[in-house]
Length: 238
Ligand code: UDP
Image 1 (cartoon, rainbow, N blue to C red):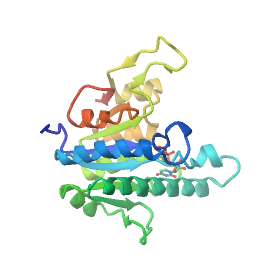
Image 2 (image 1 turned 180 degrees about the vertical axis):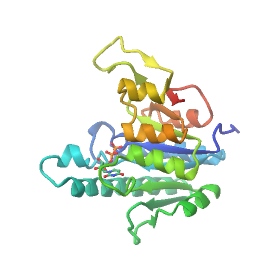
Image 3 (image 1 turned 120 degrees about the vertical axis):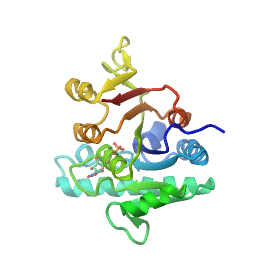
Image 4 (image 1 turned 90 degrees about the vertical axis):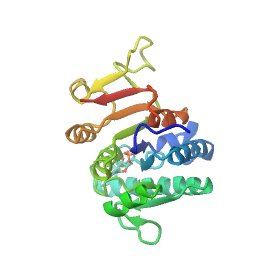
């Protein structure tokens, strides 16, 4: 059996990654393989926390901007993350994985409220914990929620599963000569405005010394590769 490189990780999965080609809603042909891999990570003894985005249903600024009050639009985005958290938890349970959903905004009938000590207890018992509602506050992103929860639960790394296989010096979709970085510092990301995470999330990770590994979710096996320490994607650290 493989040995995990990290005892505890925080996986950030964007909402859009759960939608597949349609870029909206939930695609269970995408979710299934992702959950297969997450279960395998748990089975080798890696403690997995997940922060899930909501962009496959609603993003406050993009979808509500100019037409809605920002805070209310962000509330809708946080509700969207909860839909995704419930879908992921169901798919994990179907695979025999023990899982709990905790939401930053209380929704007692459908999920546990976020309580840090309860979350870490679940994790140490081998349960996957999915964090819904981002930080619970408007004007933040689920990337920032990932950095925050990673710090709170003592995750050794943030595994940032994206729709691109790492960080490039320019957009590889537009520039065929775009160069992929293997390694960057937080300051490189902030100074060069590289689109890894938003600046709030990046600086929170930097302040708490939590490395960020950026890789593509299109091959879900990448999550397992990351957990077992294979060199993939782009690593952002000091
Ligand atoms: N959101 C928020 N506070 C948070 C996290 C998320 O208000 O702490 C809202 C915000 O409107 C955001 C939406 O939820 O646009 C969905 O999150 P995000 O855009 O980060 O999802 P992703 O792009 O990862 O799918």
